[in-house]
Length: 113
Image (cartoon, rainbow, N blue to C red; front, side, top):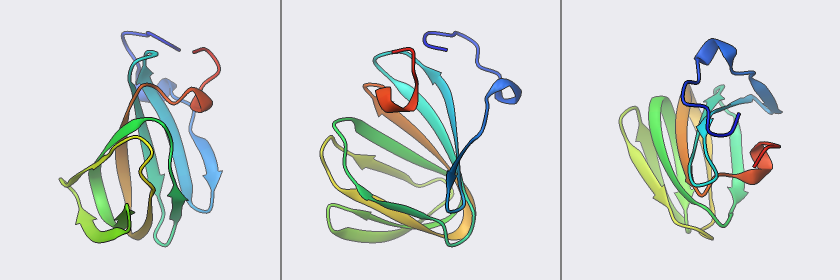
């Protein structure tokens, strides 16, 4: 829930996004949000944009990302910055996990903001 100081992973309900992507909304306030996305190999994060700045940290796996028309392959430990309004998406090349930080929070991901 919004502004929870402690968010325990076992208490977070996984949300099946279809196509091999599972989302877990972790800690958040109206100003910032942490979201884990687990991808199976071949899963696609379709090109999109939103009015939130997003930082993505690759926890594990291999992904081909496109940000504002530029493509790169990224791996565990790499970090990506997507400023508000910039089109971006990815294809998972090796099953993995992405940790996304949004500012402000993605109000469409939760009901209590």
